[in-house]
Image 1: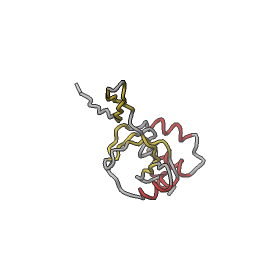
Image 2 (image 1 turned 30 degrees about the vertical axis):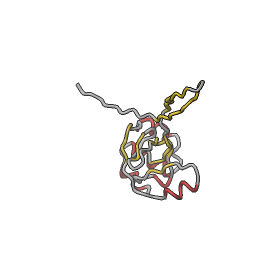
Image 3 (image 1 turned 60 degrees about the vertical axis):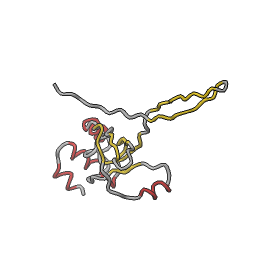
Image 4 (image 1 turned 90 degrees about the horizontal axis):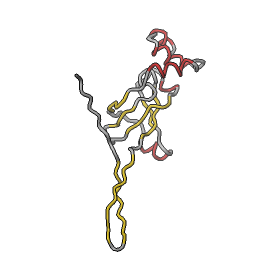
Length: 136
């Protein structure tokens, strides 16, 4: 039988409370923050969760964009212009933690094909690579 190994990551914040002159430490755990990312859904289906190895930050593919269609590029959501400029454009190694469902991505995209970049992703998800390439 195949064994599946899962790694669970938790962020722990240690809080010290003082009660009647006695100090005690209380550990409060919260789930890790997952950032938002945009990508070509034919390469990185919606719902794909990955970790940036350089920072340890996890992201979920939740959006797509015309500039990402046909590319192996992932855009990371940043909270403000300063963070975005500070991060810039870089090549990063990622670890895919969970792949999104290509069929769910295809089902959503089929209803939005009036845009060229979406039609291209649909063609690629359907295995119609020549037609997708013609939409460059």
